[in-house]
Image 1 (tube, rainbow over the protein chains, first blue to last red):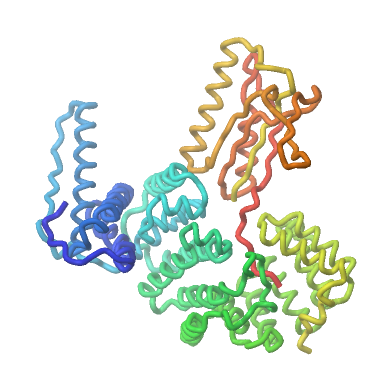
Image 2: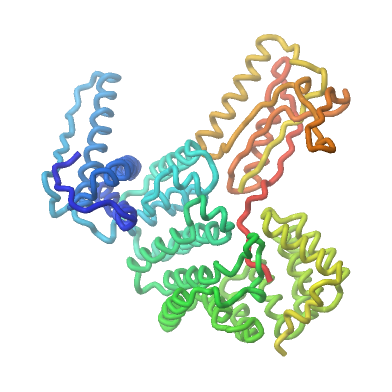
Amino acid sequence: MTSAAMTRPWDTDSEHLLRELAPRVLGVIARRYRDFASAEDAVQEALLAAFMQWPQEGVPDNPFGWLIQVALRRITDQARSEIARRRRETTVAMEVETVALPADIEPDMSMDPNDTLILLFMCCHPALTSSSAIALTLRALGGLTTAEIANAFLVPEATMAQRISRAKQSIKASGVPFGLPSPAERAQRLPAVLHVLYLIFNEGYASSVGMRLQRLDLAREAIRLARGVKALLPEDAEVAGLLALMLLTDARRAARTGPDEGLIPLNKQDRTLWDRLEIAEGIELLTAALSKGAVGLYQLQASIAAVHDEAARAEDTDWPQILALYELLRRVAPSPMVTLNHAIATAMVDGPSRGLELLQSLDSDVRLAEHYRLDAVRAHLLEMTGDHESAVRHYRSAASRTTSIPEQDYLMAQAARLEEGLGGTGEETIAPRS
Amino acid sequence: MKYILMMNTMRARQGVPNWRQADLQAHIAFMKNLNRGLHESGELVSAEGLTFPEQAKLVRAGKDGAPITDGVFPESKEFLAGFWIVDVDTAERAYAIAAEVSAAPGPGGAALSMPIEVRPIMNAPSQEMF
C-alpha cells in the first residue's frame, strides 16, 4: 500500500492510535476537498484498510501519513469515476481534476485542531435527528467502524450505514460550508453537541454488563470524545462540566449492578467498588470549571454526582447540599425530570410528605403524567411514609410502563419485597437526614 | 427507541387472498417500496412476513418436557401476518410508519386500513434507581 517502512508490531495501543488519528485525517481531507461526505467515506475506507493490514504487516512508521495517502487515493478514485460517469452521461468535455498524491506529507496536510472542532459541529448539526448525529459522531470523530456502531446499537450494519449516509446527505442539503461556525453560533450550538455526547454516554453507562462485554463500550467512547472536546475548548466550563459528570457517574459503574445484573440503587451500592481515580479526576475538573463563573446544567449535575461520590456511606450523603443544587438546576434548566429528582432530595431533607406534595405538580404535566419514573419516585416516597399498600401499587404501575427490563425487574422486586414484609421498611434503609 | 409494528390480519383457513392480479401486484409493490424507504432512512431493523396460519402449531411442554403440538386454530381468531422492527427517534415516527403500513392497497386499490399494533421494545437504558 505504501513504501513506508513497517517497524512497530500491532497492539491495543495501535488501535487507540488509529481511532485518535481518524478525525485528524478526516479534517485534513475534508478541508482540502471541501466535501465532507466523500472525505468521510474515504477516511472510513482508509481506517478499514488499516484494520486489515496493520495487524498483519505492522504499524507504519508514519501512521498519519499512511492514512492520509490511502484516504487521498480513495477520494481521488471516487472523483475520477464520478467524472468518468458524468462524461459518459453528458458527453460534455470536462477538465479532469488532477489530484496528485503527495510523496511526503506537505506542510498544508498537517493537522489543525480547528478541523476537529469543525467536524464536531458538523456531526451534531441541527438538521440531524439525535440518532443520526450520534452515529455520525461515533464514526467521523470516534474513528469507529460502521459495524462497531451497528453492534453497539443492536441494529444491522446496513441499517447503520444508511443512517450515516442519510445524515451526510442532510448536512450536504443544508449547504453548510466546511468551516468553523462564528463564535456566536458556536455558543448557540454547543449545547446540542454536548447533548449528543451525553446521549452516547448514557446509552453505554446504562447498558448491562453482559451487553458491554458483547458490544462496544459507549460510555468509554463518550468519555474519550468528551476529553477530545475538552482539549479543543479548554476554557469552556460546560464542556469540563460534562466530562466531570461522565467521570463522576462512570465511577459508580461497577457498583450499580449485582452479579445477576440486577440494578443496585445508589444507597445500597458497595462504595468500595467506586473508582477513586475517576472521582478524583472528576472533582478536580469540576472545581476548576466552577471557578470560571457562569454555572450551567452539566456543572450542576456533576456537582450533584460529586456530593454522592464524596459520601463514604449512604447515610453520610449531604442531602441539604444536593437539595440546594437541584433548586439551582430547576432555575437553570427546568424539566419534569429535574423536578422529580428535586422531590427525592426534598423528601430526604424535609421528609417524604413534602416530597410527595412536590410530585403533585407533575400529575398534570403531559410530558410526565404517563411516565413510569413519576410512579417509581412516588412509590419510593410512599414507602418512606410507611404507606406500603400505596407504594406497592405505584411500584407495579411503574414496572408496567418502563421500557427497560432491568428496571422492570427491580420495580417488581420492590413491590414483592414490600408485600411480603421482607427487608424491613423504607425508613430503615433510607432515613431522612433531618 | 425500537418499536415492533405487528400486522394482524389473517384468519385461520382463510388462505391466500383471492385478489385480482393487478391488485396483488400493487400491494406487493407497495410493501417492497415501504421496506426500501425504511431501509434507506436507516430505521429498519428487520421485517418479516409469516406463513399462513395453516402452518402454525401451538406447542406446550409435556410432563417429560417433550413438545406436544396442537394443530388447527379456531376460525375466529386473528393471526399475526407479519411484523416490522424499527429504530426511530420518537413514538410519533413509529405511529407514522404504522399508518403507512395500514394504508397498503387492497382490492381495487382501496386502502386496507389494517390495524397495526405498535409496541415499544424493552431495550431502553436503565436509569439509576433510588
